Length: 360
Length: 92
Image (cartoon, rainbow over all chains, first blue to last red; front, side):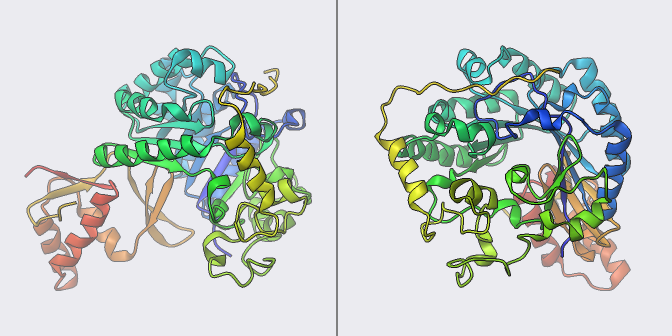
């Protein structure tokens, strides 16, 4: 068993945005009993002892936690590399200065489009100008800046302009990640899944930009797995390199794994190292012994580990099957049919169901 | 990507931190979204990369410590890290 490198600390699922592509759980009320500052301190210390080196502070919107500066300071004092993943709402200059002083290492700002009206429509909130302002503050305070964009049918045509926005903001990295169909995004899949022509056009733009910006900006492009021949190597293997702690203290191998029918493990009842080593939610799919056919005899079993367990469960009802994204999966037609529909449908955008808001 | 020369003055990129991980007993480079686990000689090289020493200085100092250190191996190691934007070269 390896030690995890990264902790995704999901501090809260509360969020001022209502993005229709949100992959957080739909049953948000189950997560309202959030960990206290003291509990997060203990979790961070245990994570460090377990070998965690990077702490991604995410959500929801982590800035809605009033103790965010204290949590950053604790992580920094433990020697963790700290990374804030934010919508930028609440990222005022005074707050940013306090986070800087607390030792925050890196800021990732989400953007929904380069175009203000479309960005606000996708986010379900007036937010674009505040995001641009926040990016300026990030650079002025000397942080490395990453721009995060979730791509889908309604914004993938703007990849060139999005890269232009990142360049103008002085971003060091830009992550263009096609939507993963979990949580709310699953409900919106028909309206979000792009067609093949859209993807081809986006990939051409990305290839050119990588060449042109090679010395200035890392351009990360996450393929839409529905269009891949093989599945994604989810999290670098189940419970192998990363772990997630949800707002109420549940420990998971990845943020989507709350959907699986496995016994819960929580930091409120056990230590992180015991959970990592022994909890069924961690051991269920660790390694390759559990693999089904055709993965078991496949040359790629150490490359993609059978793909994503959550996607297998979502599409087939059985988390231990081959990810249906793989063209070798006996369930591949489930994905093929969705792709077919995305390429047959009308060009006019389908309505998005915005994520339900939560009271903060 | 051009190779690092003996007259370049390397230093860690601003967003990169060199750190020791007690859990793995190894030095690591911490970057946004990535960890690079180093072997002992990698850490020794990077600890000397302060933007003032040239690569030739680094090789000479390591030579004093360990006997002979192959200059081309140090340059290859740094070239790889420059390509990953972990290390920057300052003008002589």
